[in-house]
Image 1 (cartoon, one colour):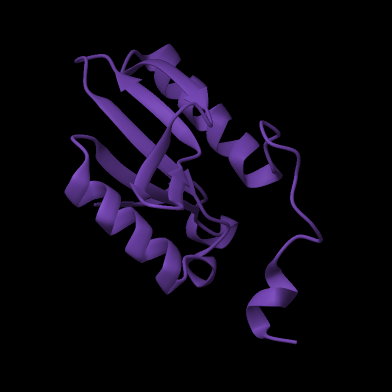
Image 2: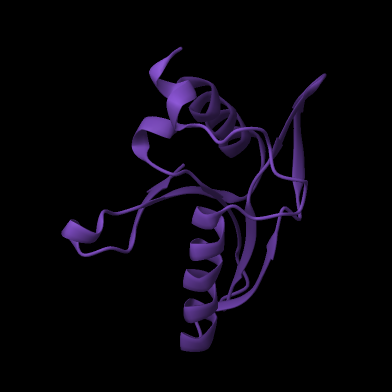
Amino acid sequence: MSRLKNWQALGRLKTGTMNNTERAYSQHLEALKTQGSVSWWKFEAITLKLADNCRLTMDFAVLLSNGELELHDVKGSKFMFQDDAKVKIKVAADTFPFRMKVAMPKAKREGGGWDIEEF
């Protein structure tokens, strides 16, 4: 069994159901909403068609208080952010007029929070 398979959840969650990392990120977005930098967010709200039979559903659509719409994807770690996911996000960033971000949780020993990579 590959190293990645050991990290992946057993089976997929039902569409519209957040895993623990996504739930933690939604709490982060709620904190930003309280602070005023985020106006609105929605889980799995937008699916992008990249090519025939190739789609990408980002985890969060995020409307900033300045009116910009960003799409955020959440990964459990940098190890989980594999080449196929990177390619899809890069293609989406080049094709659509949204800022794409990938958020990965920082270890508690590093102070917690999120590492966010922008595309």
